[in-house]
Length: 242
Image (cartoon, rainbow, N blue to C red; front, side, top):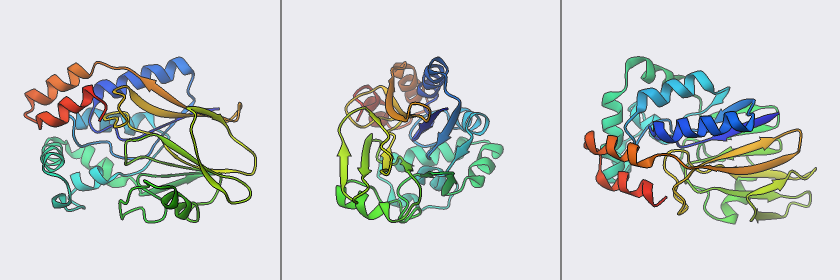
């Protein structure tokens, strides 16, 4: 079975549709989503519909929570605040109600999904260091925990002896007895210097995880953002993957 794990769409429909086409080419059987349908970009309703119709499991992100008025937007930087207020005001009622149904955490067999971290799902703290990762291994069961939030793809493995290390390759075998905390990057706003949309692919038959990159027409997304008077800096960063 091939499971695609995606995160941080942020109302970027062009990136999402390109990723969908790539997933079809790869023969993906199921799609898991780890949060932030909306925010930053110009197409919140279309992206919410896609997540509602296409994903098997989905969780809420901090931008989703903010769009619902459940998180203080004053905690956001000025550009992010302006964008989330725009998204919230342009969301249709069905999209708002759908976002309300999303839990903070989902567990399916040996897979945990959470947007920021399993230790404190609603604290919205980032996993930036190896120490952060090691602490979070204590807060999920099973083999895999998939996260997003930082928009930066990185995989951390804890082996059978409890040693924690970053995996430096874009594709790697799943080792028996080891556990994995994996940030799958961002579909709609990559921040690792690569403008291509990023998602994760777990192949349970091969026992392998891979990062997948998909180029898309970010110029089209940028033009929509300019027309919507969304912050110019948010549009321009799409070209640089930052």
